Length: 367
Image (cartoon, rainbow, N blue to C red; front, side, top):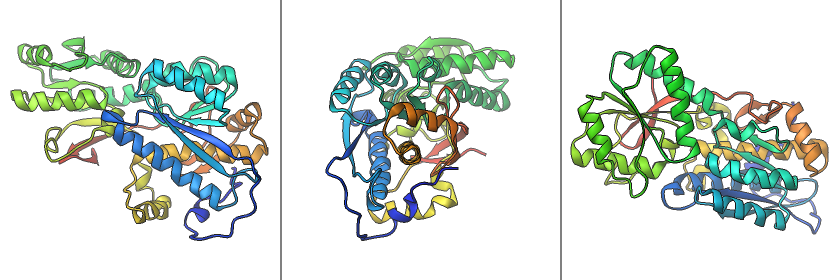
């Protein structure tokens, strides 16, 4: 297992005398949705990367150089993601932590692969992202073929006799989760009443509410993005629509305030286990809180993405993507996500998902 840099000790060490750095810096990029409905996850991305970069720099840097960060907002848009990827190639970044949404990651990864830049996404779950034989593409989260199975198993176990509807958003991620969950539901002898595309912006769900009423739907699976789910919940409340809402990991990005804190009470969704609950990360949680930030799961998955890359760079003693990629695929790494490794596709070795529920805008494990 590689432990070439003691990130934890450095992060909590306070003021340190740093070794002399070379003039050249190593630049990495953080890319994802940063504003609007993606703001919460964007903050987690930036906080996660800032935490690990501070730790590395306080401990002497990487290969004797300081790590710098640049942040870009693709708004989970494929065209913007491609444009940003081309910019990052011109800027000669050494690593990309991102993108957030699967369709953006898939589009941008073609640029990174050709340019020889390692991309590690903490959140892109669509299988296609790592199914194309690319050398430089990795993720620190699980895949939708696992997430869809976990959702389906939960529905079969808890709601097999209920009327179930499925809707999905107009994006690779949402449709992918819905299709995989549907496949496993059908294999488990559960047939959905309908499988429909959800409304696009500005998100008028009247037609979906009509389908729910006509078909007496008890459970609605909707693996939507945060903005769409927020709109659905507000309109459901306004129209008195009562249905058990089940979603996926994007639910973790929903922004709650005093106006909508109770709208999603009881909604259930899948997400990887939260590293904040790992006692080995107690000190890092305390450090974040001292800075006035309450770390959430994507902060850790972002932290881990940079952390594992940095360990591979230190082990190979080079930034060369060919060598670093080989090390990432051959080693085991001690990270905030626990001990992890990657397979030949670039998928993480411990890609678990569990079920959560909301109550008063807070996330809890579902027993």
